[in-house]
Amino acid sequence: MHTVAVLALDHVVPLDLAAPVDVFGRTRLPDGRPGYRLRVCSPGSEAAGETFAVRAPWGLEGLADADTVVVPGCAESAPPPPAEALEALRAAAAAGTRIASVCSGAFILAAAGLLDGLRATTHWAAAEELARRHPLVDVRPDVLYVDNGQILTSAGAAAGLDLCLHMVRRDYGSAVAADCARMSVMPLEREGGQAQFIVHRQPPVPQGSALQPVLEWIDDNLAQDLTLADMAARYGTSGRTFSRRFREQTGTTPLQWLLRARVRRAQYLLENSDHSVERIARQAGFGSPTAFRERFRRVAGTTPQAYRAAFRGAASGPDAA
Image 1 (cartoon, helix red, strand yellow):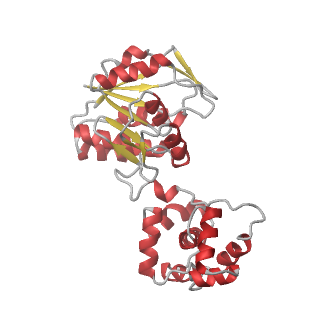
Image 2 (tube, helix red, strand yellow):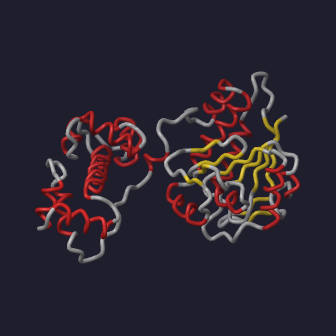
Image 3 (cartoon, helix red, strand yellow):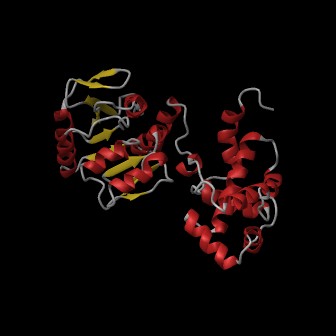
């Protein structure tokens, strides 16, 4: 039987810990036998969370002969991972054990040196910090999970479910994984990646900047066919000078700023209105529904229709029309 060891460190995130325990614990083979032997391991007898404690039946020795080790994330207030836990992960990796992280568990794998030179992901809000701390890691913030073969990483806690189901499919095939997905009340594969959840904030502009009135004017006129010349004229200078000053103060180009603003407007309308995709394309200033769909998929990683289905209910509530 395939053995999965889940490493619980102090300040472990509850959902990160529960996702692999639930998925691997629910997996059943066609003849009804469990697909996995599950261990919860910790450096001590207990892992203290911020609002609870987990009693771990296994110590770090439980990682030594496991077939898969899963590393949940820890809260931001957590201390650095214990040296003995990092060493146990390195030893498991050297022995060929499959090792996966959930959400900020990628920081633990990176601290052990297991992600150097590899593609990896984590929660989109922490991706920039992971890349800053560990420049040898190729951080991909817009995907749900990354499978490098032996080393795997997932985005937020819900994406940990996606990754665990992916590993079940690798181990036992699509039929077993699909049954497990049904028990978890989720699809075996979700459309799009993490990009649809990312909040695309524009780069900050210094307070009192001469650009502020122009940026407000752009937001008020997104539905218009704005050009670089229009924006430069509003600023009162040539297009070249405007582009240079714009990049100096925002770190991006006027066109990229405009496109991001239009996508954000479209996201708001998809979440909060019943307008058709064609109408939203016009309101957000895209030249055509086709151009809108292409740009939206490029930025959000999914279609406008799928984005609305995923987010409108949560934004509008049960009384939405």
